[in-house]
Each structure stands twice: as C-alpha cells, then as structure tokens.
Length: 518
Image (cartoon, rainbow, N blue to C red; front, side, top):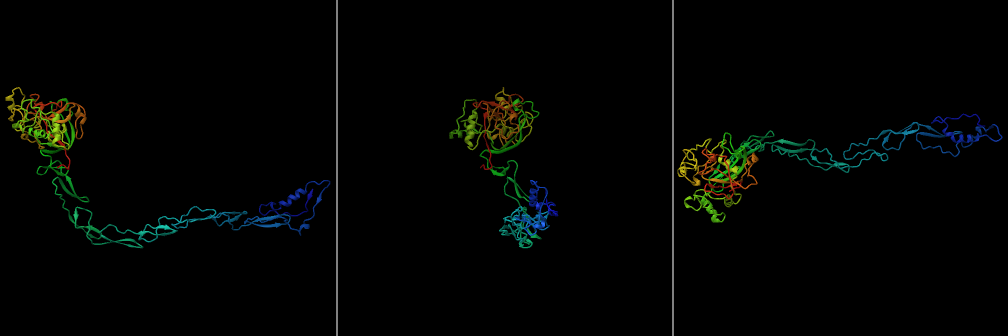
C-alpha cells in the first residue's frame, strides 16, 4: 500500500473538494497499486519537494473574472470565488456581478432614448442599443409650422400653419408660442343665410341684414325663401296657364302643339266605379294609374285636318262608302270629325302631325281625361242618364225623329242626327272637347278583357303587348246599347279589328310631353 506522510490537504475553496489536486491524486492512485514483492512503501516527506515548482506544467489562469487563481503545493491550481463586478458578454445588461464564481447578468438596458426621430428596436446582445434615424412626422415646437418630419435624426421642415379660419369677421395671424390668433373685426359679411343681405361683423359674428326678395318671374313656380337654404322655386301643381296659349310643365312654361292641351294625373281611378250596376266584366277592377305629362288634342281630328295629311302624302283617304254621312271630302262637313277611318289610318295621321312621338291616346289617357278629375262618376255629367242641355252630340230627340228605332236619351236634344262640328262640342273641366258623344274614338291599346287587373297601380299603361282587336272609347251620336245608356258610361269599352270603319268612328291624337317642348 502506498501512503503519503501525514499532511493536511487543503479543501478546494470553490467547491469544498479537491478539484485543484486532481493531477497529484491521479499519480498517487497509480502508485498505490500493489507492488510485486513489496509490502508497505513510504514516500518521501513533502519537505523534500518544497524547493521545487509546486505546479509543474500547470497553467492556473481559468480566465474567469469571478475567481482568483493560485497554485498550492501538493494541491495544484486553486480557484477561489470572489464577489466582483464583471461583464457577462451581453451588451443588453448592465451592472453584472459575480456570484458563486459565475458572472451573472445585471439589469436589462433600456433602449428608449426619448427621441421621436429615432427608432428604438429591441437591444442587440452584441451591439447593445442601436437608434436608427426615421422619417416620421414630428413637432419642432413652433406653433406656426405644421407637417414637420424627421430628417437625419432631427425634426425639421414643415409648412406655415394655415390660420385662415374662413371667417370674414376675424383678422388672422400666427404667434410662434400660441399658434393661430383670430381677432374680431367689423367688416361687411355674409351670414350664410341667402334669405338676408347687408350683414356686418360685430364681436366676431356676422349679424343684421334685411330679408331677400325671391321672385324668379316664372308663372309656373311658387317662390319662397327658407332660412339656411335661400330662394326656392317650386313647380306649380298641374298645368295652369302661363301666358297666351301656354301651360306649365314641371315648372317650365311651354307652348303645347297647335290644338292640344297639356295633361297628367297621379293615382287617378279608371274602370267600373262603385254603384254602377251596368258594368261589363272587362271594366273591372276599378284601379288607379299614374299618367306622365302628355299632350292631347282638344277636339277630334276633323275631315279638313285629315285631308291635309292625305294631300301631303302622309295618309290614305278614308273609304267614304262605309256608311251614310261620311265626312271626308264633303266641304259642308269639313269641320266635323273625320269618320270611316281604320285604326291604321288614324295612327298614320298622328305620326304625320306629330313626328316626335305622335300617337293615338292610350285607353288610360282617354278615360282619365274624360273623367277630368270627377271621381266616382258613372256618366260624364253625373250618376244618371239625364245630361243637362249642351252636354254634346248624343243620341237625342233629333236623331229619334229621323230614326225612331234608335235608343235615345229621353228629353235631350242637341239638334244633330249624325256628326256635329268637332270644335262645337263642350269643353270639360280639363279643357278637352267631345270625349263623350259625336263619334267613338280609336285609342292606342290592344284589347284584353283582363288587362285592368294586370295594369292596376301602373304608370303610363300602354295596353297588352299581344292581341288583334283594338279598343274604342267615348260613345257617339247614336247607339246607347240599351235604353239605360249603357254605352254612354265613362268606363264602357268597345273593341274591333283595326280594319273596322264606320260613320260614328273617328279619333284624336296624343304625344308624350317634355319640358323643352315648344
């Protein structure tokens, strides 16, 4: 057994063991192996090595700032912990300190430099805090500039502050410390209300002024002034007169085409009215329609009017052999409604007379115009078959004297057996003549017995898109259908093929109206 002489071993100051003496212990353990033929062997005393290098071949500097490094005899390198400041190699900590032989991190470095013109990203462990320049908006402290921006780490630039408050009652300036200043004045001003004028500034406010007079000189508008809005011209409802032979249309004074009137209607009823027990099924239901402004002939087209179209090549002559009292070509009947015309001939005349949209009136335009605002009436004059004198050319005593078989209105006389001058028929409340009596009239629509249900609530209904028969409206100088005058009612409908003609059948024209009409 190998033994060292008694010698106190020094505990490792850092770990409480013999870490520093490890090389010598290894030698001792190697020598402690049994020696062949030997018993106990005693090593020389330590004093024998005192004049030698106690740590031969050992470098005791462990490069640890948190230890002191020494070499002790028979122990070797000894590393003793010390409590010192140190640097843990992380640029993002400060105040690092040794603890238990290890350099521990101190407080985290704050990279916020309080400069708006630099960005403060997270700390880089190698470089520490880095503050790159930016170009964000900033404030240079001058209240009279705006829009400054960072440049090369400095807040610079900017434009002068816009101190104009658009108030005529203040004088505007800028103070670098206070910013924009607005000093009251006494200048003339406009208070923003077009219903006053002549205002002046007082104590920073625009006050006073006299009322504005609103008058656009247009008879087709009602003029008024609303505070905050000013003068407004509102179109006069309806189509009242605005001068000789002129009418109002959407606030504009227009001249209807010669011999025509401007009409329109909103939510006007047509069809079988309540209390009328003589209605046919095709007159129902009673329903409301809206009619955009349109022009309508005041009177039926006369034989003379139609002759002008024939002479101009726009129309073909009627068949004057269709029945007795054909008016075309008879000078004494030139002012009477032209009769014996087909639907096609009537349509051609309207297109010739009115090249921009001329046509026959629609069934809705005809009935609404015939009613002329009289809601719920069965006949043009009232609820019963008793027209007052002068109600127009109707089946009367004069016709009955010539044709006793005809149904006529008891006690009524108009002096005509056949047609009467178109311009002699009485005007209704809308200024239209002959919409009942004299002759039946072609209208634009195809006929359908169920169309009223389909067109209820519509605007400007033009009739069915399919069908052969065309509608006739208005009644004539004879044929009441029965003694009760069923055919004279305002809602009564007839229909014939477009080629039909007769001496009690004529027409009138219509045209959609526009505010630029002349």
